[in-house]
Image 1 (cartoon, rainbow, N blue to C red):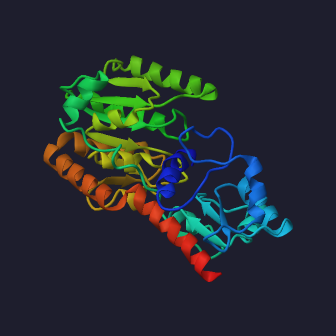
Image 2: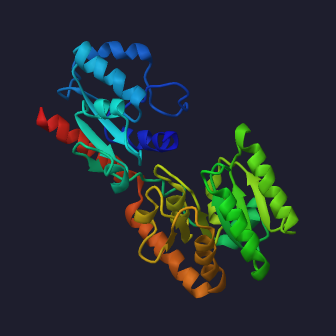
Length: 330
């Protein structure tokens, strides 16, 4: 959620005055101090009220207090990414919003109030294919440029299905000598033992030179460009940006049916498999390792869909349309 806000707010700021509020925000974001809340008693010059856009319970509650207890001229918007039944307290908070956004149809199915489905977008200028192709991108990040590469990016932990990816690679790579695998992401302290065990399994299989753990990278787009196939094996996901980022770099995707993945990986862009199903995951990956023409066709379809549907500007426009409907209703 935080990464989506970091990308979205500057895009929104190109269209209307917007500021983020909260701890630990990056320096480049337009933001306000807590003391700035005092100005909320005054209506903005060009609008009948301000909009307080919350993404968490702890953000909805202050908005309710500012609007209802302190009588500030505000309207409240909430974005829900959760794909589980909300608690009674959360339903109470959501019921007091003036507008609700769901990040996917699946998350919207758990809402009991009217809502608008708006998928997240990504920065297509950042996530794009390498002009020299994947082999050139592999050279830039220090990978073997001659081997095609399949990747799995994100936090290294059980929920993300990193073990499913590693086990699939242990089963498949001995039969596909022209391929290598990359795991990019950080294992936080409580998951270091999990990562250590995965590395032990890789070493026991004699594949430490072909299943690589490269850690966390802030320039992750460079690693996407080095891929020929991306795998998203999550057991659970609220939304999940990684398939969108991969497709925007011209990479087809094999993904578990969680989060928004089944809405994203369509139209020949890859394959969706049941979550937590290792045999199905391996079976979906292998055709891409065997059939280069089909893989290339899926890569083209992935890139075309990303350029048509995944733009961050599209998300910003759709959210602002929700704001405009609230302002018009006044």
